[in-house]
Amino acid sequence: MTGLFARLAGWAVAHRSKLPQWAQRLMESAARNPDGLVGRLSARLMGAGGDAPVTTVPDTEIRVYVAPTNYAGQGYLWARALEASDSRVGARNMAVELPGGFAFPADTLVPIAAVNASEDWAAAEWAAASQFSHVLVEAERPMFGKRWGRDLAVEVAELERTGASVAFLAHGTDVRDPDRHMSLTPWSPYMEDPRTDILRADARANVALLERLGRPTFFSTPDLAIDLPWAHWCPVVVDPTRFTAPAPTFGSARARVIHASSNPLQKGSDRIERALAPLIASGEIEYELITATPAAQMPAVFTAADIVLDQFRLGSYGVAACEAMASGRVVVGHVLPEVRERVLRDTGLDLPIVEATPETLHDVVAGLIADPAATRAAAAAGPGFVAAVHSGAMSAKVLTEYWIAPGSAEAPSEAPSDAR
Figure (spheres, one colour):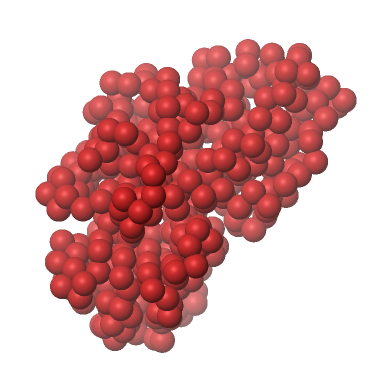
């Protein structure tokens, strides 16, 4: 029964956007209130109370604990980047395992049912985490289940009582203000997202918490500087060696165009096929929408493509775009001018994502097909940019300079100069 319910839950999470509103509200209720009736029932059906893994504590001078979301495997990769940057650092990430996830690697992957319901796991994980010298909290989420009443501010106070230094890392919707975003781009998804009222309230509460606590704060994508102007950009990380691929051969055959979408509404997936319909009908391109693909398969997905369409509504870029650029593929997406300026200011490099909106996407793709030489040049700029900005070195340097060992080195050119 437990295994069947877990598989059903995984299917529901993967197809959430296609479910009726009542089903989505039920899932939201379980996630937002684990101690409520629906939350407790879900935990019981998924087998809460069984043995769950507990984080191991590294035997190093500096011990960094990263938790609890691991979106796109970033917690794990930031931990590896910190270890690679300094032999004195041992880092571990703990991630909550959601049904229907994308199988991103993690040092400690804990089923959500155990996080929500197991007091034994919460006590054991707390005992481990309290031995770390530094704790990086992702997306303002509580980390220790019932141990401290699911209250992040209390968790921070208790961690600091043990002598730990606590910092925060924002990921996106957790701090992005929908009203501000709608004023920046006419393509904002918040005009249509049924969750906008909830996301607005959550973002404002999270930003207020960050401002009240005043601890070192970072954000993962450069657009979030608009919402957290006093924080520091800690770029998302990809492993360039996983995405090394032969250069695409534009002009020799029909171009293969793909769009990898984990969130159709926020990425504007519904606008893409409509814009490209004439090119598909004429046979100039082959188009495929990629969904629910495990992380381990993504290098092969990008290698098989010529042009990768990223996102067209948020006005930024993230892990998928970096992986595609590392693969030497042309990446097309809508990036706000403010975001491009931030990238150039903090890195000295132009962001090599070809600009397009849902309105201009057809013409932009047609232009890429018509000029193979220029398209190859655009693709060739990607791997170098990723190596410089998104391979982990810049992220580790920012975390070290502005949190782990402040003032230990000359301030990196990558770090925001307006952060407090």
